[in-house]
Amino acid sequence: MDDLAWCAADPHLSIGDPVLSVFLAWLQDFERADAPHLVLLGDLFQVWIGLPGAQTPEQETVLAALSRLAGNGRKVIYLAGNRDYFMKELARWSPIRVCDHWDLVTDGPARIRFEHGDLINTSDANYLRWREFSRARSVRRLFQLLPAERQLRLARHLEGRLAGTNATYKTYFPRQELSVWARRLKAEGVKSAVLGHFHLNRVVREEGVEIRFLPQFREEGVHLRVARDGAQTLCGVKR
Ligand SMILES: [Mn+2]
Image 1: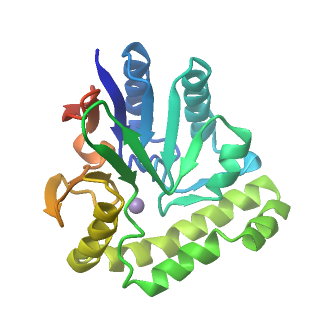
Image 2: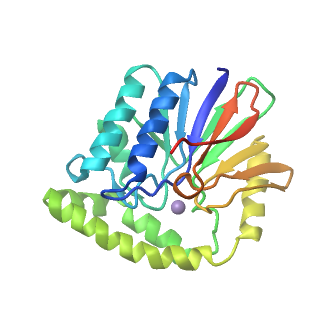
């Protein structure tokens, strides 16, 4: 095995979700493979609150598996998505590294940028304000004062609120904003990027940057493997 990284996007796991066992089996496959990096492109759960008291049993199970990987020297990188809250907090009490974007350095000429993708549509000011507000430190402090079961209930409420925002956001493809984003990457010397969030299976070229939209783990049952030379392959997931 010469993979540098395995990557999955948008599992959107929920309580009692049958896809949970598929995801855990995939983590076991990753454990058996030699790849040093596990890159999770965000929105791993329907809603994930990164506070220690707010974890569902499913989240505890996944965290235990991810912690075991990290304990064995694997790097677990989490790109925060729009269903993820207070994830910087999660990075404080778990071995998961949380980022808004992250670059994989390959043996080939290209660095590969990984990002969830919800921040690209800069014309959706309402959404960006909501993302900013819901993740603010003051909001987190208030949230932390609530008992765990109220934290979870509020999480469900947030989920409902988010559904509307997300639907509006997904009704069109932000071609223009994507091009602005790609230009910035190019200026940073990044020529290749991987995005989740859009639930598309597509590779496009914008401003000379190759952008891969990684399809949803739960719907399409695929993940991405990146070889040491930077070559990308979409692979199926055992069900
Ligand atoms: Mn998303």
